[in-house]
Length: 400
Image (tube, one colour):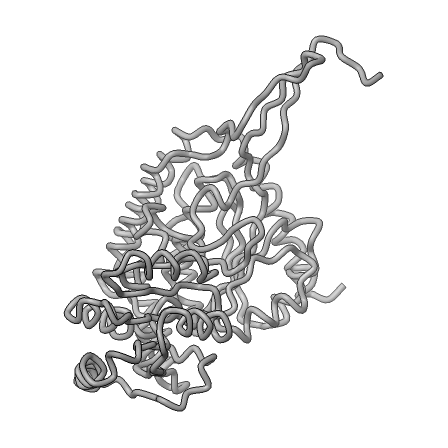
């Protein structure tokens, strides 16, 4: 067995044992430790920022784009928000042990379907070190151990954040950052389906497809976020402008940013010139000849004029990624058609796609956004990090 293979196997074995210990903790114990983690992050702000500065310097030298560097940056505000997110998770209801349903059969056996932890979860992600804290606190709250494998561009930031969260009283190896940037480590971890119960990749489409192709572990996927806004003929222009600009410009490097703007044909001589001017004023490059399937993650937007909501839905169905799509309209019938027929994880009426987020949905932090339909879909919070089991109580019944 190679050294790296043995190291990753040992790491996964320790994580699996930690998951067994975590499953024994009650809600009060978990919440107390989560609050300690949040305090630990704030106390370590200077250490975390020093580590982050090393990552940023290396990222600039490697030629990372401004959008990618923005995703990587941990300033005072973002560290404070990370700690706040951990505290919010502590304040959320614990789904573990919750009865989903229960019933009694004619033969007298009583059946309960209850939520339980999944076990040991592998998170593979790029650039955004806040994922380290989000993943760790959500997995911990649900009694899962977590193995974190961030991108090489954030290795120092990730290690510093995890160190701050490994507070006294936390079962050993509950939160593990893979300590090497060797990509072969991922290949070895993805073979360990007897020790790791779930893999959640977060990052670019190439990363996720590579993980899916190699993994023996079940994978929850989020290939990309080709998100749309359709401005209908009955839209309020001021509202539409706010939603489009927010969706494209607030943070262009994230998965719920708008990549394609669809304009209803009757607005070609009214709203279209206005929004083109406003987008240009924000430094956005407009592409009318886009390939329609590219996730730009930058100040670039595809723009297409369509004839009505039906054509908009057809475009989204053909080119979208089932992530998040929005309609701006004052017409309820048109909106309801869009909401019913656009088969995406989140569909918005008169609201920005940037709201497709675990914190915005009230989940506290989020583990990711799934574009799958099985097990989890859309922003994943606590319930999506649990499985279930059946508890059957009898009085001596047997099967005849």
